[in-house]
Image (cartoon, rainbow over all chains, first blue to last red; front, side, top):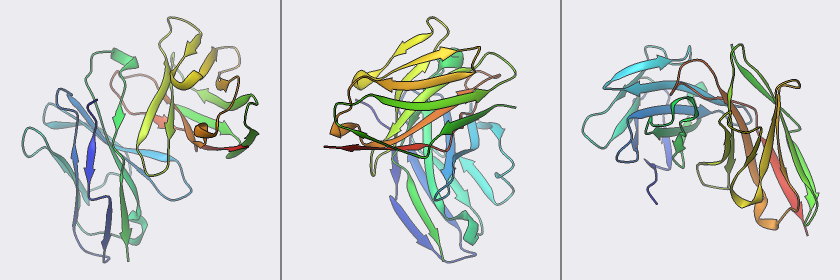
Length: 116
Length: 114
């Protein structure tokens, strides 16, 4: 069964460094998402991406964040200058857009980002 | 604005007992509702979703949920818990734009005792 994959599974970085989190969505999917979960808190929406542009973003997704689909398979989240509060589990998700409002988002296993 | 509240961050049941995980939503438009499960070191997996076709929704692994508009609830149940059901469960709502963001509850960790 097709699945969303994410690399790395765990990333440790120093405050102020740039990180890129990578995701490979399911191959025929058209909509892509990033969510994050700070330890002990809710899963929060960051951004959605469709047709090579951001379709929606949350207040969390400020100028330090960017997303890109550099080729036909990868979907990346870049944090330009990491802060301690960016430490979280980051989930990538994708959907095929076929079901309208009940469209299912398929999630990857997550990347745990630790900022020291 | 939409929101989800899951009552109980931890639920513990005995194997074979009824599982009931509570979810209440708030939405200004008819909602689309989802339950996801997360097993250790894995991503979020869809259990079931409310499509407005039927108020009682059956999902994978014997779980089901009933949409009650009057109570703004979408509680998840399973008649008989298995040890393999131990995981974290998330209720989520989507309203408004199709293909839009999911808004999650805080999650409920289900523990199953032998």
